[in-house]
Structures are given as C-alpha cells and as structure tokens.
Image (cartoon, rainbow, N blue to C red):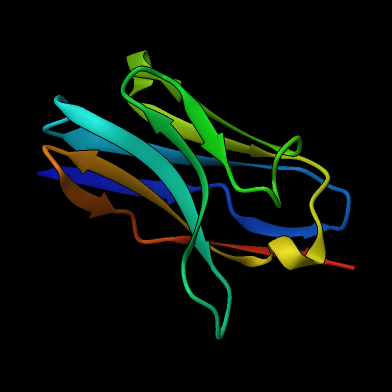
Length: 115
C-alpha cells in the first residue's frame, strides 16, 4: 500500500506561482511511475505531468514550459512547480503513484487562479 498526501494548493492571481507537494508513505518501492493530474468542474481528469522510474518526464502541451515535476527521494516527496499560472489551470490537482502496476491516488488539492 502507498499513502499519498498532497498540499500546497490555494488561490493565486493570474501569472503567479504555486508549488504542490505530494508526500508518500508506506510501501514506496517498486514504483513504476508517478505523476500529477487535474480535474476541473465538468471535465475529465487529465494528465498534467509524469515521471517514470528512470526519471524521464512528460508534460501536457498546455503546461509545457510553465510546470515542472520533480522528486526528492530523501523526503519521499514529489513536487509540481507551477509558474505563469492561468485561470484555465484552476482545478483539483491529484498526485498518483503506480506501484507494481496498481494506481494509488492522493485526496487532491484545490488550485484556483483568478484573472
């Protein structure tokens, strides 16, 4: 089992920055990949950024050049640095870890970007 706890969401003005954190605990080995997703009201959950076990990264086109996913192994924490935020980035952000091909999700953290 893997437990994930997100933090760092909040209200920010357009053009501002936020850093989301995802603290992992439990059986945090044999991780296949990890990532950040978001879901806006009335929309499907979508991939924002992902990182493989080999540390290769992938980003949604809408956030490339603005968001950065990273991992601090010593703290068992994954981050999503979000810069140049836009109102359309407003959503609930979830972190996900895939371990032995099972998905584990955090509870989500709200990000609201005002225009």
